[in-house]
Image 1 (spheres, one colour):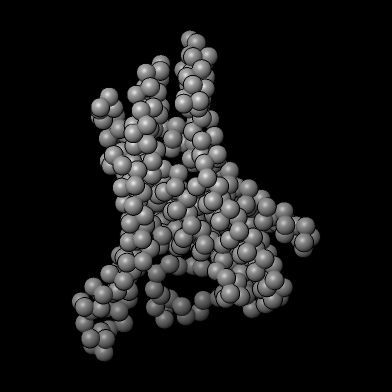
Image 2 (image 1 turned 180 degrees about the horizontal axis):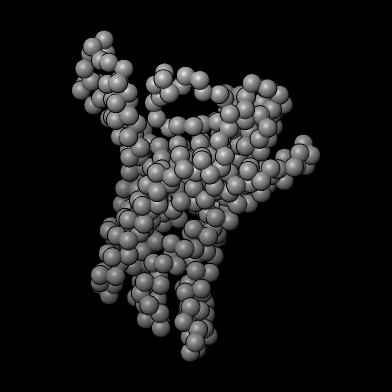
Length: 335
């Protein structure tokens, strides 16, 4: 009730003519403050920071061997190696983020609307001189701002630790790739955020929306790959009778089906950006590999390789939020 009173005072102070955007900024600040002060965000923040420092420690422990390998064309990219180097005891940070990112998005959005309605604060907020769509936009934007600040801070912390411990300056190409990694990570978390907001509108109880969001995440993370493997194994003809072209087509079909999962799209995009030597995300024939010289791709070429994955994540995020927007605008909030 105290935060609602402060919110109402902020709206009334900023509702003067010519300040149409002021109520929205007040709502964004209020939602961001509520997220930062919540225990679930603090717990997830601590978990992400611990995994980040653990992965960074493993990378620094093995960075000398990684950059000393003259056979590796990526050995000149020190800061990209800090995000991808591992000795097998602990996965790289982008692999951890593939697992923890959905939990962060779900935690920030699973009770965005239904908790307000169950507590009776939704109709009080709507009684203020604001547009209805400002509420759902503020909840989405405030969470994305927090996630953007979090990932940007971790990236800057990694760069600062690298400069302090190694004395090697970062290359412009590495800055672009790390920035692309941060943006894709924000979009990936934004998809799960928009999906959890959608479930918070569809279901009245917060426990139901939380369990549904986690169930979708578990399905795409664990069971989807198992289901695809079983279906393909049942439908695949005998291996000896297949030609090389048929095997390539079946592999492309498997990869395309796996890329319906958001985690696979994120994994493909981040792997290509953080490993410049990756030239293709699909199966290659021997003719395509013949005469290929190991080298790194420019940032623009790597971005072109992962653009379908990035477009897929953006499209899924926009679709889920558009559905949330449509359902919320047509919802009766007085009951």
